[in-house]
Image (cartoon, rainbow, N blue to C red):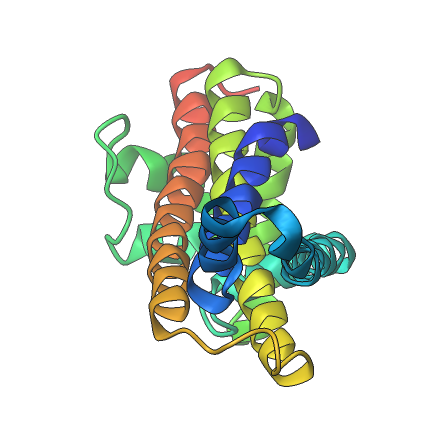
Amino acid sequence: MKDYREKEIKYLYICYMLLFLYWSTNAFSVLAQSIAEGWDRLFSIVDVVAIASIVSLLSFVLDSIISSNTKDKLVGLLFIPRAGATFFSRLTKGEVVDDRFLKEEAEARYAEIITALPKNKKEKLIFENAQWYKIYMKYQEKGSVAQAQKDYLLCRDLFVDTIAFMVMYLLSVVVFGNIVRFSTDFLVSMLTVATLTNIATHKKMNRFVNNVIAIDIALPKQ
């Protein structure tokens, strides 16, 4: 499943490295001056490029050691549960809007699950996610489900990697303060990307969850 992020994540890091060099270091001004005055000053760029590479590498490492469950919690800002863990509760409240199936039809199809929903909030989240996952396992190879999952995971990882790069950037300002300067423009840019990718992740997650349900309802009950 990791093939969903091969090019996009690479482009994200390249973009952040260039913005890092432009807004938070003097690399581009030194480069321009070197071109104008000769290349003897070019060696001074090596430090900032090395730091930018270190920030990117540590961001990637941080992303790699963060579990999928933790990534979902970060996307939910530690208080919004995954869509699959609340689907049946949201269905009964009329909060699931999808023109591929009727609310009444879905409620009838999953009446046993809805009736068995625990009262305890934590237990309910675990129960709902487990029930949705059982349905998902039947259709995980379906084209629309697999693509929706890839879209969701890509948006999630773009968000997490942006947060990781932001953390490493702020640490680099502290550790390499004599070379790396704090840039409001760079921080605002990353916060903007983080906000947009977070919103996109929730939309793609809901689409992924609903795709599974739409296919299950459309097909004869097994």
